[in-house]
Image (tube, rainbow, N blue to C red; front, top):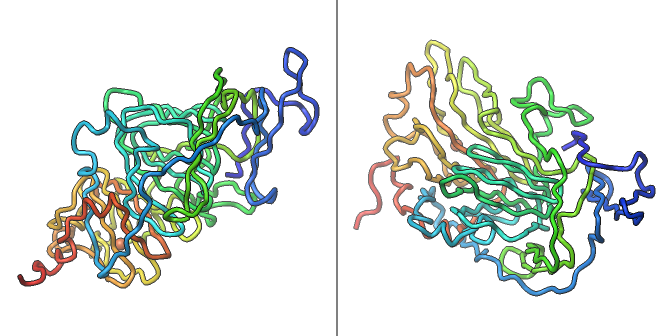
Length: 401
Ligand SMILES: [Fe+2]
């Protein structure tokens, strides 16, 4: 995010004395990526950001991954993970259930009504898609007000918490990277500005607008970090003597922000456009794309649904959020479904979908897709809601009994 922002008070010159009203010094902290060689911000704390008074282990939600074997396309019915009132005892961080993952990225899902603990993910950036509901995401950089359709990008090690707001549970689809998540490089100028052919621009990105200052002592912060547990992860709880939200001002190019999927301007053509036109973000060894309501292919002989495709280098995860997904009709897939189309299997429209799509001018569909370049395993959540029969949806029959 090479888009400079300043919030609150900062001294006119970096790395110089910056004093509190009582004459004491603020603590300057540089939060930067890639070892002082990439984007960074300078934060000015009332307290000492390193201070802690206790630490204990945090047992993470189950991060075990089971290989997709035998190799099969799968339909995971995400909404079945939280069918009833479970959200009343769930928060958007500790309540996440792992659906799919590999060594580069993990996809989890939660339906929550509780405020999460203070949390930071020290393994990589998070991109949390808000499927339904609304929340305030309080962060050390300031607060973000988010709602349905927002992607919330939280840079690695950003202390934050999720507070559901509004009258319905918060449904969040968390894409946790082991790297950074950013707009696609091809949409950026050599200095990082979003270019004219990008489907969104800086005006569409919402960052914190003012400092968020809170009082408190002996505050617990849940830290997800590298370790020797499943997925190479571990968790710790740090107890910090003063409230972690003590930043009076910051500036720089590294901060959390939100982007709403409705602000993504679809790129369309006379004939079928390939999935990269739908790309919104990228991380190391994966991309995030979205399929939004759009005018479809307008060549007189166009076939609006996708051709069969074998993404030989990718596993493809489609999360069907809203609308009507034309190519998947007859497969059982609906809102709240995930399809996993693994590398090594050619996929495309279910029988009849191609003919039905001919002459269509508009697709009312909303889906978030993650393509990974290494194979995905099933988390406990994904395995629990696998419909077990999607693989046979193109042939109309499964193995004989
Ligand atoms: Fe596909």
